[in-house]
Image 1 (cartoon, one colour):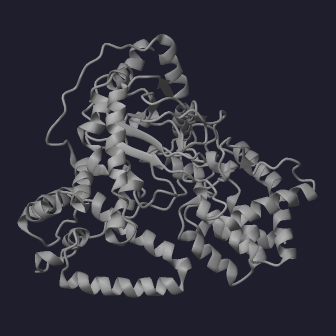
Image 2: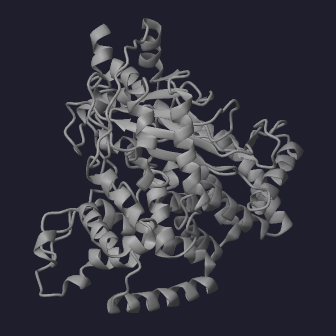
Image 3: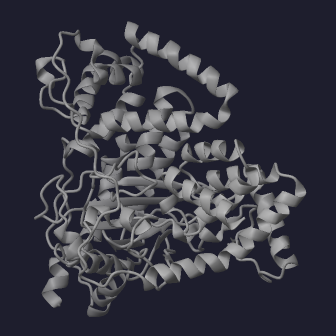
Length: 563
């Protein structure tokens, strides 16, 4: 019944925290499935969805639930999903038509940002009981009595998770969010610890603890392992490296057509900018690290996942000459400064690898339930005459068994701006802003659907106009656009995303506010790329500058000079 589906759709949209960031209509489709599942299965399904962040995992879980139904309920659900397409388009047009006129005072429908927790009253305590000391000690392999007790509790939790695997993802995500808080947030005032800890951030203390630990254990371990990883994290978060590479200046210019293209589209590709020897050196350093393996379990694995998700692979390598020379000993930075003007020193790059079958691909073996469901859905649509040619999947052109859902392009973002999917690293009120994203290809990428970087042409202007026309606080623009309770329309782009292809040494310059995403990698190869985030010299270190989102050329001296 329509009212039953509407009831479940409302619950899904409000109880699944990331649903607003999903493709429009996902809540309705999940609501249809919940109506078929009934209680208590539907409520359990919603709880399980809340523990997931990867849209493909969520889709696969939904497929497993649907495949568990009887044939009649399954067919009915697939039929209703097909009919939902028209309703979703109608709602989209209605939301656009009912949007308030530009200049209407903004009224937020988002929950208020939680106030900072009050600092606990100082109580005498030994230094090793400090939360950060326990975190660092655990990551470096040291064992304290308090940690041993926590470890026993963890083991008990893992045993329970084996009995209840649906809850495992939620427990892991909570642990990862807690770890992110320790890494990215300053220490609360009033915490007990050595006097030398006062006023320092967690990242700075990680560096100090690493140095101390390396002096004691580094000689035996050869200076490798998690300690080096933590040092890399801390340097990325707290400032410049101890040894700064000398920069090489290049006399390069962008022609008026290239500048116009960047202004209109928000990104620009330049071929052959980085010389082959620099590319080869970076690629060799990354593959050397890759050959050492990736931790698969324990606290080291959780730390690696946290760093990989927010800052790229191997941050201990990201600030070394093998990576930084791509920026400082090639014409890349000079081209960027032709648009920005003078920039602050960039001390690290993001090592961005995309493995085959990653970033939204469907693996017929790993996602068997979902693949089966899509195939069945195509047949049901054709049987009911709803869609003669299904658009659930796209043709990717690679000789692999991976499948690519058509909805991959709906999961766009802006780096460092909170949305429903990145709340662990960027809770509401936290913005990590910069001026320009620049990327370097480390291998030839001739075909699409190979883990490509994809940008939405003109989206930087669309988002600027959305902020200004509706007076939306820039830090809330993505949450407001995707909120199901918002009276404002969603942000929509009139041009499809462009997938970046090219050869090793080609570069990409992208405006901070240009919406982008990572394309599923359906190829047989790993995609290798390095990204640098550049800051205009006038930008105050670590401070959010909302004016630069309301005026997208505020930090682009080269653009304003020719305007």
